[in-house]
Length: 246
Image 1 (cartoon, rainbow, N blue to C red):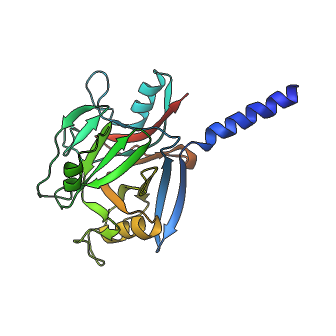
Image 2: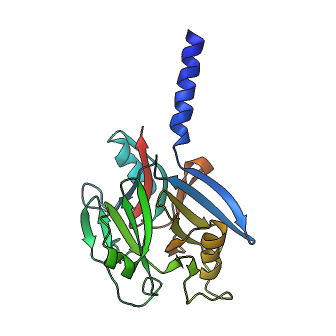
Image 3: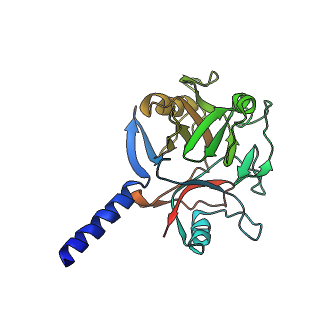
């Protein structure tokens, strides 16, 4: 009986773990990446910006500590969109139904304004990357959402302004979603890459129809499965991550 109980507990633990995000390191066309695959059928993605006292979480460890006080824990996490010096989001930001910043649809300076840019929309059991103007037309009922830019892949095509021999090279991170919205893939380059190569990785390497750039240079990832918990030199703005029970 004891042995059967032990086997049952082990099987239950394994089944529980099977639903967790999976992370891996891979090389595509000579560039090194870390990728975390999130299954929205079983994993719960959340966006996080401000703690209860109104200050930005800033770091994965601060967010994890706050979640543990609620009986939760943080799994995979990544910075999730561009922000100002005070850590306020540059573009549209919605967290658990509360809007912090409106949608910015016009072109502008910097990578964010390199239109078309886009929005990652989280809904019950799914996640979708939308080009910004399509997002405004369709007006999906997101639970949480974050806007960033530029888009990396738009309906299977690279952003029209990406150059194969582009000289702007940084460590970069972003997200792509499957056509049915059930899988989200978060990737960070482990060496400097240009926009073209990063977009090709999402389109051809991960075979995703739509993908969105989050940021470069300050890009960070938490991936316990890989023994990774990037700290960086300064606090982050919006953070996206998988939340589970302790």
